[in-house]
Each structure stands twice: as structure tokens, then as C-alpha cells.
Length: 360
Image (cartoon, rainbow, N blue to C red):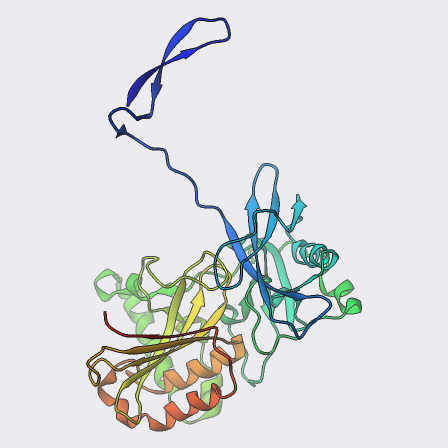
């Protein structure tokens, strides 16, 4: 650090300690804090068929407020002037406040929180600064586990998004009561790295045996047995303990892998379908990865991401759990029927992103 001079109001020169010495380029630079923000989709209120845009919701504390910027299409850059500001937004009613403010400037919010199937759960905040909710859309007979149906109101919309009407909104966003005593928020999923055998006690190894038994039952053709599976105890993140996973499409959280299935393409390339869940806003994604490294000299890979609903995630996870060791490519040629089920699921779906890469 360096020593500098500072003149006080009384004209007395004082020596002050500087954290960084520009003369010698040495010392400690305090750095800057990363701005906390979340992306959300919007559409022009007067033209619902127009291309959707993006906004960034920037959060500030003391006083609690948020500033909304309109994002430049195709980039993370935002307009220099804010689109709107909300002063001291209440936690439980933030989404309708934001939606009403956007309506006044000609935009409609397109997120889980404005969907007919989304319901607020309680006033506890998620890592995304908003109240937690549940997705009620389903095409399955079996119940959806809490870890899957939980969705932030600012989570990315899925293909089943259905906007609420003005009449519905009056009762759809009530003041959310505090959770009952002893009622926790959605607990983080276990991470596979934390349950390594070398770190587990005898009791943990025993409960792990019970989970493996449950997976074996899930692979049986008996639908009644599959419905009895305790999914909340089976689900875990496969991405490891650290946060070194892929970023979420809408928030600053990280997405973690819940399961994967490796199959063979007609050209005998490795194709992997995997499910991902954001640790912050709980948005669920399906990833389609094709590896052409072994066949082509240009080391080509192709990757697509899709937004899926919680009920769809449960359906696909059931297919993955039916195949023992499905993430390994050794028996990929035996999974043609499973591959076709995933391809049928993706028919007419528009990917969030699609990339073809060549080289390392």
C-alpha cells in the first residue's frame, strides 16, 4: 500500500493510507461487487404475436428497490436508461407489481408467475429474491415431487404457459401467509459428491441401499410400483459439490444435472439426453448433446437446450431411471426405443439455444 497526502477542511495536511499505490502498481485493489440481477421475458402488450424481448431486473438494498432495464436482443447489454423502477417492492406481491408497472409502459411479463398454472407457496424468498411457487400443470397420474414442481415466479416460461386473466389475477396473487411452523422451504437437492462412499456413515450407506432398491423398483414395468417410488429421496444432483456447472438462462444461478441417458445415433455417434435444474430459480431444462468427435476429423459437437415443465421432467426422469447405467455409452446401441421416445418428445419444440461447434 502507499502513503498519500490529504488536506482537511481546516487546511491541515494529513497522511492517509492508500489501499493501492498507482506509482508502483502495487497493493490491494478492493474490487467491485457483481450486480445482482435476473432476466425475464416480456412481449409487447399491444402485439402478443411479436417477438419476445428480455428485461434485466436489478436488485438493490437499503432501501430495498429494483430497477428494470430493457435488454438488447441477442446480447447481455442493456439500455443506458432504466425502463422503470419499483421502490420497496413487497416480497409476496412483487410479481403483480412488476407486471402492472410493465403494462403501464407497454410490455407484458411472460414468466411462470404470470401463468394460470403457477400458484404461490409461501412468503419465504428463493435465492432469486422472490417468493417460491408451484407449477400445477401436469399430464401425469403420479404426484410431482416438491423439488421438481417448485418454480420461481420469474422462472422462464415453458411451452404450456397460459396467461392469467385480469379477473384471475385478483385472487391469483393473494398476500401469501407465512409458512406453518416447522414447514421448511424447498430444500436443496443432495449432491452426488457429498454422498461418496468414503464420506458416509453406516446409516448413510444403509439409506443409500434403500434408494438403490427404490431405483430398481422404478425400473419394473408395474406402473403401480413406479407410482409408489419416493422421488424426493431419489433425486440428487450429479454435477458435483462445487458450483462449477453451466449458468442458468434467466438468472445468475447455476444449473445442476439430475440425470442422463446416452444413446446411439444412426451414424453411431454418442447422443446424450440430460435433465438440468437451476439451483436459484428452479427452472428445468432438457439438454440434447451429440458427440461426433470419434467419426469426424473436425471434432464436431452439437448441443441444444429446451425449457420443460416439472411434470415433463418427471416423465423423462422416469425413462432415465428405467435404464440401469443409462449415462454410460457401453450399451447405447440397445436403447433405440428410449432414444425414439426422447425424439418424439422434442417434436415441434423450439430450443432455447442450438450450437454446432468444431475443434476443441
